[in-house]
Length: 154
Image 1: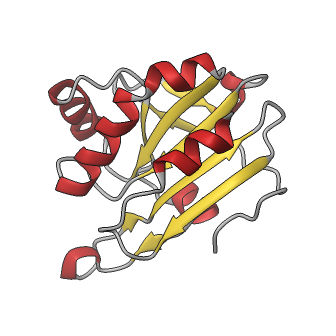
Image 2: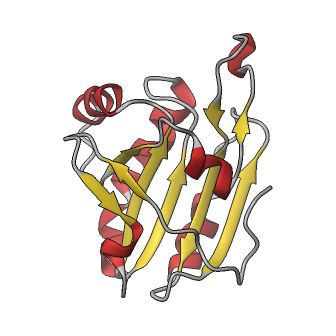
C-alpha cells in the first residue's frame, strides 16, 4: 500500500552504484524526489529516468534531490546509469524491503514466476521528511505525471 501524503517517509539505507551506502537522512534539510522504477534497461524506465536527468537543473534549483530506487543490483544500476549519463544517485533495493514500505512490488513481473520488481512510484518529501506528494502506478507501462511532480517539489 502506498504511503499517504502527510505521513513520515520511512528511513532507509541502500547501496548506490559504487556500492556505497546512502541513507535518506543524508539529505535532511532538502526536499527529496524518490523515483521507484521496475527495472534497468527497460524502455519505459529508460525514458522516465532520462526525463528526470534532463530536468535535474530544475530540481536542483528547487533544493530538491532526486533519488532513483529499483530492486536491481548495484552492478546493473551502474551499467544503466553509465549508459544513460545519469548523474543523480541510483540506489539498489535488492531486498525489496524499501519498495514494499513505500509503494509495493509487482509479483511475477513480466510473467516471470518468482520475479518481483518495484512498482513505478514517485514521492516528494519536504525538508523534514514528510510525504507531500505520492503517485504509484499498478501499470508499469505508465509514466509519472512529470509536471505534477515538479510542481510538488516547488
